[in-house]
Length: 237
Image (tube, rainbow, N blue to C red; front, side, top):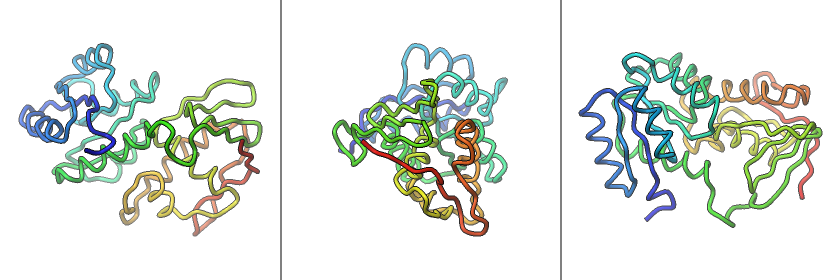
């Protein structure tokens, strides 16, 4: 058994056969699965079931998956993996802009889907007492990140919501301040996978994180041709 078994997963896809096959795969991996085919059903399921992760198809009738992801991210940090029949980088980038934690193009290999789910769940909910960051507070430029609560607070004391991907990216920067990190290094650290050629996913995540840290000034600097650097001094306790 792995650490991520037994989680509640909501699958949202209007293709009944895909729902049947993916649900079977996830149940065989030890998860509890609820599958729905519309936006209305998704909203009802989230309200009543409170799943640990959502697998969300982009191409849905009526309200599309991108819109649903944006709605969800406005009120929750629930992990979302987008499923899309399109392999276009634009769809992937837009999905990440909407707040998705990862994406997977159809058709996909069952093992890859399970690996992506495990990686996202592992980042979203680390094991109690485990990991080097458990119970620590990290401070920078007047901000505080409580790694036990996974809570970011600005200098005014206001809690700033972060998606799983944004939290993971910020933590990576805080663990390696004032050091240039390439896109490949950031992708490996935050998404537990090998970067694809010309993958702009990390640029999207950096842009989103910068917007949320806007009042702190230019904390994440672009180093042309090399990657990104987290500029402020970092203190830990």
